[in-house]
Image (cartoon, rainbow, N blue to C red; front, side):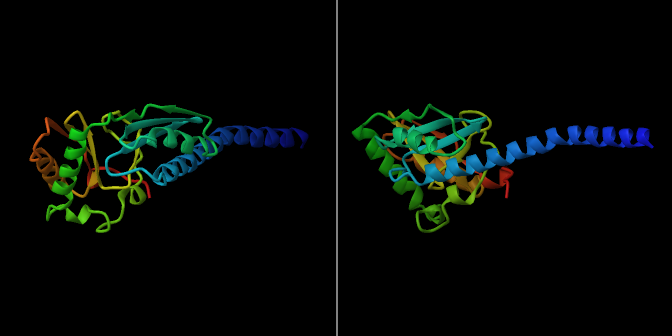
Length: 209
């Protein structure tokens, strides 16, 4: 009888030991998802984050890595301060690029903005015409210019990044046709030297609900 009890106790302890790592890993994943959601929320609430900036982030084991482009002068520092406030973030690596001031680039920014958002096929993406994709979408990873694993956080469907006359379109659109039209409209703007179309097509990405 005692031997049977010992065997039962050993079996229960062994089962518990085998289950604990899986439960622990699941809890870590859930906590990481919560931290990512809070990071995204903080970035989307930055007051000077506009259509001419773009932010993305990666979070792993307490460290948040920030990437992107900042047109607003204080956005890079504000983004870092906001993310540092998130519980679970122990360190922030801020690799956001500050875009240099340029009147020529400013002119291109606004010309591209009106060319894209006033287009009959793309007007559905204009502010007020559609839900902001940064609040609507959650990507498990972002295979963009920084590689896999980055999560975009943007308040506009199509962000317009301009540096030294070179335009990069970043964000998400509904289909490949809209992506191509946006790229074409940007290339038609006088003064642009180059257009890189980094828009993501929504239906080509798996989303977590």
